Image 1 (cartoon, helix red, strand yellow):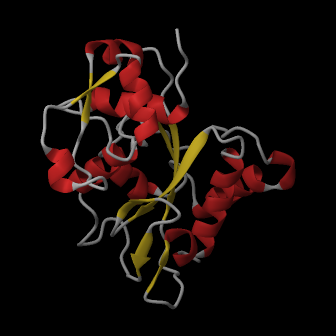
Image 2 (spheres, helix red, strand yellow; image 1 turned 90 degrees about the horizontal axis):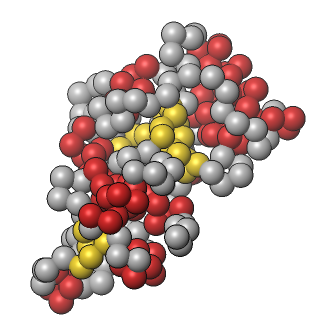
Length: 221
């Protein structure tokens, strides 16, 4: 049986949990074609191709019965979530990787980077305003904490998670309770190793992961 790449596995899992079985539009075309060649996904009967063009987020493929069976035993993708921060660059817009400069966020990012140094996990920032962010996503400057009025809705988070191919994933949250609760609306079984600990313990946990002797190590409970 042909092995699948990490993006292919993630796309297949996301399609398996989608209400209509849609493959995430962000999955590269070459990866989708490979899944189709294996009979794991099929083209949707839609006119989205000519009407919306090649950059559309409209669904183009859906999972097949064979794809659902394959997804049952393929390993889930791993995601590490870090929180946004009130401390931000004094600029109107910047990539997510540069915008957040608060010390807690910086420590959490360093820990997540160390825990995912082997490439086994995807690191995303959970923004109270914008939701799930990749490092390259450009965002506006804002002031908002998770739980405050205006916090991103679970519906938006669910759509983002599907688009990114992580709606079915093993998720670990490197953040406090408010961000873990927000993420739990999408991933009820997520791991929150910092639950019940004070901020000092959070920072010590992060330091244990990113100190030189631990780089490349696993996330500890």
